[in-house]
Length: 296
Image (cartoon, rainbow, N blue to C red; front, side, top):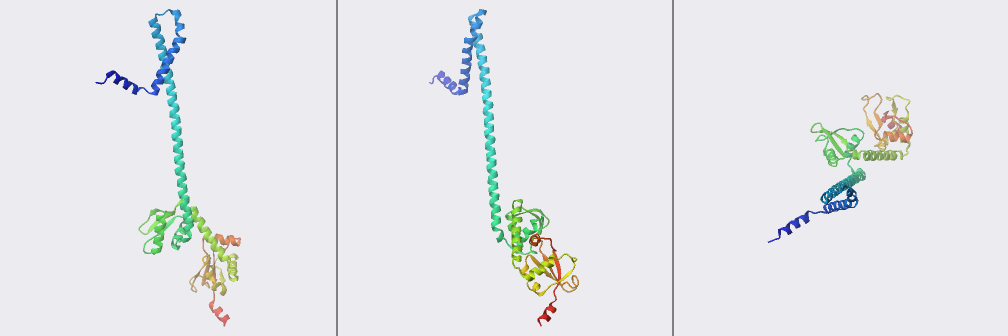
């Protein structure tokens, strides 16, 4: 049979912690100090030994308990403050790490978009160009064709553009994802600037004649310019910067059967090249019969 006293002592030993031992040590030290410093001062009172012993012990115990409680509470506060600071710092590091990871992922996505922009289909570029400056409604369905629908689906799945509101089965109000906004603007600016540079690099007489008509702002907007054969013959060389439309005689303005106009995305770069603001379009007349007569 186990010794009950040994069991009790074992439990007591397990209950005693470092703090408890330190507390007892402080109380013991306090009692000893009281015996050293206070006991001599009680001698003049000629107190009974039992009373003197009890009084010194009580004072020493109380002082030791107060001192240990103050010490441990202060230590707890310091530990709590230090722990809180460490936790806060770790949390800030974790947030910073997550933010760095997020920015790295976003940067990777933007760089991937820049690298693949030239490989986007014409339909995808048209959708992005339409949304570049303003949010608007994008149509889908059988009326716009499969290529347009596939381009729209790809842009939505990759979150290049974001749907804001579904108007009906065929119309969705969309916006460009802010993450790609600057990259899209930059990509289109580089594309349009390059196309303008390519057209201006032709340095042909017919192009110079056409540009002079655009730069001539002395006439009204509805003035009809004479279009020489060389301009008419090379009209496709100016695309996509300068486009054209044909009209039947009398359908638009008298004597006007062709219109040349600078596309909106290219307009600021053409003005930049010429160093001044120009007309957005010119009305023209190309007389094919006169050309045939001259050729004989």
